[in-house]
Every structure is written in C-alpha cells, then in structure tokens.
Length: 499
Length: 59
Image (cartoon, rainbow over all chains, first blue to last red; front, side, top):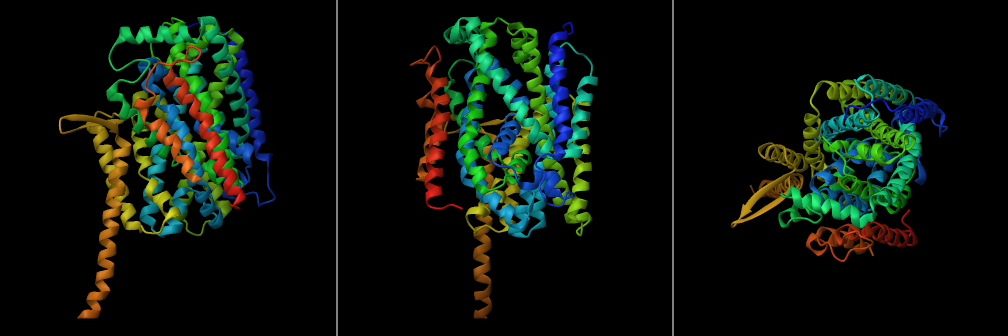
C-alpha cells in the first residue's frame, strides 16, 4: 500500500505519540509508594499496589494487544466465522482467571514472589522445574513482543511513511521510558491507549455500517464474498471446523494468563479482591474485541482493494474516516503496541533476574541489584525483538508465536495444580512438562507449523488444537509418573521392614 | 454457587448449538450475537459468584 504521506493523519498521530512519551517518562513519579525506591517490586511490579481501576486498564491494555487489533479482523476477513474463536477464548478466560489468579496472587504475595517460576520454586523447591517454567515463558514471550512491532509497522505504513527508521525510533523511545519508569509507564499509558481504542471502535461500529448500509448489508456482502471464494470459509463454521474452533478457544483461554505479561499485571495488583473484581469487569474488553473482529466483514462491504490481510483495518480506516480521525485511530493502535511490548519486556526481565541471575549467577543479590539487572535486561529484550523484526521474515515471528502458545500452555500444571491440591511433586510435573513440550512442538512441526492436528479414529477424522493435545499428554505423564513414584515410595520402606 | 461458572463453558464450547445464521438480530447472524451475548452473561455469573464469596468472607 505505497501511498503519499497523509500529513493531517500524521500530525494527529505524532501528537498522541509525543503525549504518551511524556507520560511514560513522568510515570516514574506516579503512584510512588513509601517503600524503598530501588527495589524490583517497584520497577518490575509498580510497587505491588495497583488497585482495581489501574489493574483493569493495565491488564486490558496488555492482554488485548495491538497485534490483536490487526490480526483478528485480518483472520475474520480471510476465513470468516473461524476467526471468531478469539471471542469464546476471551470470554472463557475470565472464569479461569477468577478461580485461579487470586490464589496465585496470594502465594506470590505471601513470599514476595515476582514471577510464576518463583511461585513454582517456592512450592516445590526444584530448580529444574523453576527453570523449565522460566525458560518456556521467556521463549514464548519474545516472538510476541516482535508481533507488537508488526502491528505498529502496519499502521506506520498506512500513514504513508516508509523505511524502518520510524519503527526503530518509536521502539527506542519505548525502551528508554520503560527503563526509567518500569511497570508504571505502561500502566499510565494504558489509560490513554484504552480510552482511544474504545473511542475508535465505538465510532467505527456505528459510523461504518451506517456508511455501508447497515449490518445486514455488511454480513450479506461478506457472505457473498465467501460463497465466491469457497473452501473452509463462511459466515458460520464448516462441520470440520467445530472441534478446532472449540479447542482453540479453550486451549487459548487456559494459556492466556500463563504468559509473563498477563501474570505481571496479576502480581502487581494490590489484593486478591482486586483480581476478582477485574474478572467481573475485564470482559468489557471482549465486547470491544468482538466488534473489532467485525471490521473484517466491513472491509467486504466497503469493497476495499487489499493486498495483505493485515492491511484490512488500516485500509478500512483510511477509506472511511476523515484523515484526522484515521490518524487518531492509527495512534491508538501504535500506542496499543507499546503497552503490551513494555509489559512483556518487563515480565521477561523479571524472570531473567529472579530465575536465572539470582538462582545461578548472584544468589546474594539485593533487591536494588535485582532492579538494576532487570532494567538492563528489559533493554536487551526490546532491542532483540526489534532486530528480530528488522532482519528476519515476519512469518518466522508468526510461527514462533504460535509454537510459543503451545509451549506456554505446558507450564499450566506446574504453575496451577499446586495451588489447589498437593499430590504432585516436582519430578512428575517436570516430566509432564517435557512430554507436553516435546509432543506439542513435534506435532506442530510435522503439520507444517499449524495450530491444529488432525488424526483418524475408526475412519473418522478429528481436528483439535495441538496445544490442548500436548496438555493432555503433559497431565497424563505427570499423573502416571506421580502414581508410580507414590507406589515405589510406599513399597520401599515396607520392603525394608520385612527383610 | 461456583458451578455457575461452568455454564459459559457449556454454552460456548458446544459449538453446534449456535453455529447458525438464523435467527438474526438487527441484521447480525445468530452465531455472532449469541457469542457476544455471552460476554455480559459471563460477567454477571462471575459477579454473582464473587458477591456470594464476599458474603462468606473471602478475605
């Protein structure tokens, strides 16, 4: 989409970008507690003092990423109903959050844990299991950060800017204020970002169908386009898509809050009650996501000429909004990339510091020393993601993110099970993790890096989310190993007595 | 009471139940408005469970 620079849109965009940059640097003074300043709790968790509102904006701003705003409508545009699995996914995630996350927060709060791997080490005392959870989390997060850059790249292009300099500049600015303000920067910027995104989407879902002849016209033109296109597309699911749809929704919902960026939002909350209240009110963002997904259909009614699916949203805004509002919308998406990218890099930096640096390099590191290490690591992580996007093909980041989703789901038993019952021990959970990870990634590679796997039972073909299959293998392995271990343990002393 | 939280899973994971275009609502096929409707319903169910937990003195 090489187009002339849209100066009106660009000036609005730059205005908002400068605004959040100022906010980002000012954030270090915001919500400062009385606690000692140089402490990882301050930089990495915003002082562990975010109330219900801040948590709502932060988690909402960081779970519903810029890449989501670009990719979900792109998928809905490409395949129709199947792309909507993001909706049941982001509904089912909240009962799960409500049940699990207050307990995880409790465990972390009591012992001063900063990461999920900390919680795992605290419970099981196993460095191996801690490392497994930590490494999986970092590996799954890196491509996710890179994808935020893809989201930003798409809107920068839509403004008519070319070259990689604008993207690099935006990201370096982000890296600097995250370095200085820590989690407070994305928390403060999330207010701006979320309000902007709400405005854009509400305007879009009212204005765009009005311009295009109402929702019936929108769905009719999308339905006609899918009928012409054929294949596994359409306004409803094909029979063979039912199981993939449901299993992707469930698997993604289980995995969502295993990522370091979502967990960082949880650990930074003031109380378990803050998290419970957020489980009630966070679904407001899911309504937004559902409406954003519909933009994919509006693109058909608007008869857009689109070369790559990712251009659906920017092309729609450019075609139907006045230039100044298009600039506002693009700024919302770009700022929407900054929040998750910042939280992800902070989450990854916390993990490196707590579960690698403190565990293996400098066990006697002070909290101030931890903060110093984490700040530097957050810079390295962001520059790594930038290099990733500038020098490697985007498809590579997409594939890795998909594999990352399968991998992060394999940390679920180790992180969650111990919060509810005390039967599993570290070796069983570790072997389960290893089996799930190996099985899941092998299947995904054999299928050509696809998220779903098809297998045949008695002539019938079933297709299911690979991550969920791997999780089943993971849990089964853990159960069998634990069962065998318990048998051996109870038998061994008895044998001793008998002889 | 916590059993209420199972309802969204049944309602959304049993996909054949809502995989239809009709009945449409304001031009939006059933498949879409049914799932969107489950957003506030889930919110409400979580709130009911939360309220009961507060009464019983969770924290």
